[in-house]
Amino acid sequence: MQPAVIAPSILSADFARLGEEVQAVISAGADWIHYDVMDNHYVPNLTIGPLVLKSIRPWTKATIDVHLMVSPVDAMIESFAEAGADCITFHPEATLHVDRSLELIRSKGLKAGLVLNPATSPDVLDWVMDKLDMVLIMSINPGFAGQPFIASTLDKIRVVRSKLDRFEDRSGRSIRLEIDGGVKTDNIGAIAAAGVDTFVAGSAIYGAKDYQAVISEMRREIARAHGEILQA
Ligand code: DX5
Ligand code: ZN
Image (cartoon, rainbow, N blue to C red; front, side, top):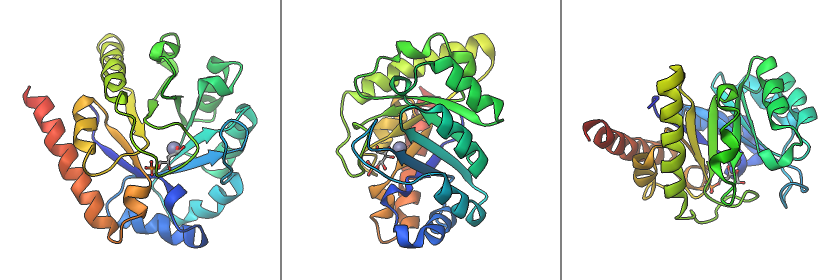
């Protein structure tokens, strides 16, 4: 398992002060910034595009993890690579050629990942594992922050974790397992214990008064759960 990453989703930040909000969570101990892109076509909501990424890019050196909830995806991959993304993930249902879109991200020198919706089978990963740097499991239906965590996701995490572990044994290459949706201090331990190493949290972090307190508590819960896995 790779070192844990906490990635606040800027969807719950104060958009009038986005640069400061990005800096605030990183100084409060977060590792990455999760950047949610919605097009009111693939998902029923509209958020931010490459222009906003370009303007927040100078505010942080932290990894910016772009989660594309758009269809089609290829033109947006080009634009977000240009705007300064470090990782780009997309939903397999949103592109006609999953392998080609993954190749496109990698050709820009960025980390690439697929996102599994609650009803999407992990089988879609099987023939593209060598092109993945991360797998993002949605524990809500994409489109909005602040929805409750879908409990069956824990079983799916375990299925994907063992797939990724088998791949790592074969290839020596590790793939991050990321979760997004309804992650809070009171369920992050169970999520970590199921095998997640990369944690997106929007409302739980940006909705709190003290970012540092929430992030530290999340980190303690993750460390406890991962410590238990190592001892098991
Ligand atoms: C929803 C987004 C999430 C969202 C998570 O489609 O992909 O990243 O911001 O927000 P919370 O953590 O509040 O569920
Ligand atoms: Zn997201």
